[in-house]
Amino acid sequence: MEASMTKRAATKRHTREHGILDSRDFMEESKVRRLHAAHNERSGWSPYPSNDDRDQGYLKTLKPKSEGQGELMEAIDHHNLVMALGPAGTGKTYLAVAKAVEALEAGKVGRIVLSRPAVEAGESIGFLPGDMEDKLAPYLRPLYDALSDRLSMKRVKALMAEGLIEIAPVGYMRGRTLNNAFIVVDEAQNCTYVQLKMLLTRLGWHSTMVVTGDPQQSDLLPGISGLSDISARLEAVPDIAVVRLAERDIVRHPLVASMIGVL
Image (cartoon, rainbow, N blue to C red; front, side, top):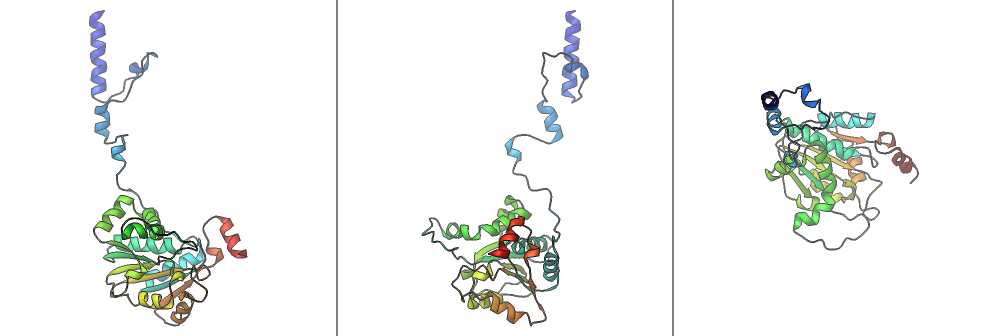
């Protein structure tokens, strides 16, 4: 009897070590079997948090959700300078950043430059602690959100450390020439005419620039925003695309389109 039990135990041990499940192991209700470490090591998967920092293994397919978005994507593919104007929720920033990531990953450009005016949205937040990056983080957060939706944050940090992705406020763009780059100027309705003229003339060789904004949602004093004026002037230039999105292109909650129509 004892020899039979020893042989059975040796058989079960051999089964566990070689990763083969035997139905006889589960016949006794009083015993609970666990997956052994040796089997987990062979499978290459671990449930522990140390495995959670892996890179994102998929990429969402970029498809337009409206005619206006399709027009914007086509304009970005065929023009070096695109003005994307439209109300909130039409995907202006997301599509521009997604196209920038797509161009960088395909090797069409050498870097991405994202710029946004550091303008308070009606309220004063006072002096923020930290260095320049800490002070500007609240203003530039929407750009980080758009990037992290296309790339993992680990990948974003690595590209920023290498200088392949640069996020800067409008005030730090003066005097630069951006060659071999994909430039996205976000929230351009909060730029003055002089600021926009300065930004547009940063465009260098083999570069694409997309300027996004909503002329009806400026945080500047009335008459100071230069987006509408500059867009109207550039619309007459053949090689520049001015895409005007409308309420029908809003892809956020349906209530957003309803509110835009009455506010």
